Each structure stands twice: as structure tokens, then as C-alpha cells.
Length: 305
Image 1 (cartoon, rainbow, N blue to C red):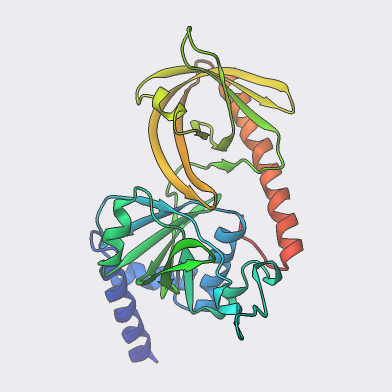
Image 2: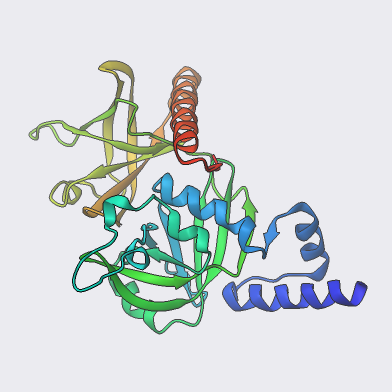
């Protein structure tokens, strides 16, 4: 039994070193992580995280061959294996397909192409791929490899192997509440005195800042380091007025095209303002949990908040 456990830990250590080469993995830490369930090798235990990423449309962070450059993507449904052609007659089409069904086969996963686009070239020649998914309280890192460039319908996608290992990373970043589509949350931004104010949709919010979407032309207005006045509305009610400094701009693919994401850090001048933001974050989190519970009920899958 001891020899079997030692062999398993050695195998896990080699896998981790292959997919996360810049880190160290003492055997004692691995033994603790296995006991706590922070390292998973069974496909059945990895599956719920992928189902959650698909149903909740989570952004994936992608690292190739342990390099520090991070790319972005999202999981995509794959109904191609469920379509059978017989004399050019489709026996099953996309609309007959149940969301997330292919994941239950635990054979592969499908993602949208990476952004920035150069990552797609690097991915094709990569030896190891690490995917990172954020939940409310921890991150999940998944070890996988590239299989093929393919299409789902007319959409180009990437086919990756079903992850062989997942590890839970606690305190990976500050808590961020995802803004569900059901919440009528609007962010109003003052760009400059001579420009009209911009209304946009927040993606997530924390007590330190928030991320929101902008169009291709609008993203040119946001310069890292620049400060803007922000107004936060829910159901047309003004919740707070505060200032935020642009910290990053990035591109993420969605099914309908490219999404430009801007991240700002709040300037919380008073404790009262910080308390207001904390209250907003809690309200957004409650709305997200409600939205996730409804998706769980509809799909029959226990999605992870």
C-alpha cells in the first residue's frame, strides 16, 4: 500500500513539474493536498469544474509550456460528434443537442481560439497546457494537451485532451463576484469633459475594482494609469459614485466575436464608500448564486459557485 501511494505521488509530482515547471512540489505538500482533495486525478471529479466553466461562461486563463504569458479563452460546446450524416441528411442537429453533453464522455474539451491570437500558433506546438478557472473562493488549474484544430458548425475551435489532473489553488486572487445577465447592472463612465459619458456592462466586481466590456473603438479611450469617474446603477437606481484607475486592457473571445475587457481599481477615499462597495459586491454575489442555482436546476448538474 505504501509503495502504491509513493508511486502515485511520484507520478503526480512529475505531472505537476511538467505542466507548472516554475514551481516546486515537496512530497509532504503533495500528501497533504491529496488528503484535502486539492489535487484531483479522477476524471469524474474534474468534470464538475468544466461543466461549471461552460454553463457559467467563465473566462479561462491559458498558459503554454509554463511560460509566464497568459492567454484567454472560453469553453465551447461540441455537438459535432453527435451529428451523423447519412446521404447528406442530418439525423441530429445543433438544436437537438443538450448543453454540455459532450463533456460527460470525458474524452476531450473544446475551447474558442486564444486571445491574443498569437497564442494559437504557440499552442499548436506546445508540450503542455495549463488552464486556470476562477470560482468565488479558489482557482482550479487543469493540465491538458493540444489535440487538433477543428470546427463546431462553422466556428473554428481548439480541441484539447480531457485534463489529466486538476489542482485547487486557494487565495489565488481577491474575491470577485460575477455579474449575471439577469441583474440590470449598468456602469456609467466619464471619459473626458468633451466626450459623452459611456454606459457599459460590468463583468465582475470586487471590493478593490471591477472589469467591464467595451467596444473595439471604445477600448482606445482607456489608457492604463488614467483615472475616470464611475457611476454604478442597478435597475436604474444610482448606487454609488466613485473614481477608478485603469489597470489593464485585454481581449477575450466569445461565441459572437471578440470581447474587449477593461479592468479598473477603485479609489475608495472613505470607509463609508468602501462599505457601500462591499454591499454592492454582496448583492451581486447573491444574484450570481441565484442565477447559478437556476442553471443547476435546469441542467441537473451541481455547478460550483
